[in-house]
Image (cartoon, rainbow, N blue to C red; front, top):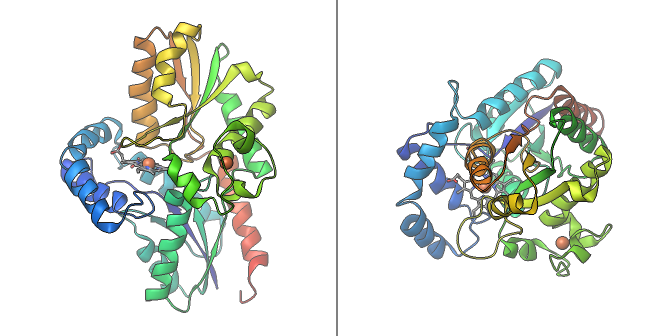
Length: 342
Ligand SMILES: C=CC1=C(C)c2cc3[nH]c(cc4nc(cc5[nH]c(cc1n2)c(C)c5CCC(=O)O)C(CCC(=O)O)=C4C)c(C)c3C=C
Ligand SMILES: [Fe+2]
Ligand SMILES: [Fe+2]
């Protein structure tokens, strides 16, 4: 029998310093997130990040926490329930970090007699620290605990025409009537990660390569995949190029991350005449700390205190009906065609 496992990033159990420390330790000790040798990673995480960051991050989490829990986990659970209602096969939800774990999700499906699992990493764009870590962690768990399970993976869907239409429609229906600029703010990545996962070793991280179409390097180029979404949504919405801008947020550490940076851009925009801004975050399918706190609270404050007049944050797709139906359509395709022993 076939089953489905949806996988999102995960959050701390509670917005307390203790639980945030546990979460950050698991997250940042992932060799695909901080890709240094184990001992260096351990020194960076335990010696440089964990002494101070959990306290600050716990405050940030507290400011966006819902009665039912972390927005990212709550929204993922709601999506999972909507899908389960419409799919006759077993469906489970897991988080890459913390709970419910990928192991528990696979166990739940296995206990229900599932033999073939479609794993859906809930990230539109590929990155070593998102899609790849979900795929590799799932494979490790399968080998160790469920050798008879067969795993299948939904690839990054940034270039799926229907997904682009759904995202564009969602943005259009939430755009304010009057705005100077629509800002696409994606989660950042160290530039080094892009070079590391570029199998062709040709990506130069400039417009001539990441904006081009049809290059082999694009399959693993997060920057290209972000540029693609921005450009396709712009075209679909019929916006002039001067009406949009793409930036990258949430950097950590001193090495160069993808640019331009969201916070620095928001500081400078008002002096160039951009006073009313709408902001969307298409690297996330569900709202989370990075959107609700970093963008909609901290970056909003930054923009307004530097001369901006209006800052309108557009929610992620979250429980958008068309988006949930898009997932269901892909699940149904897998159930009908991808493997034989149904
Ligand atoms: C080296 C560090 C990090 C990389 C690389 C990274 C990539 C990356 N992350 C997301 C999605 C999310 N990240 C979230 C939080 C978050 N991310 C990092 C660090 C890296 N992310 C940290 C330290 C944190 C924790 C919060 C903090 O202390 O600031 C979240 C939010 C989770 C939540 O509970 O709401 C998401 C989602 C993507 C898509 C990505 C690569 C493209
Ligand atoms: Fe992150
Ligand atoms: Fe590229």
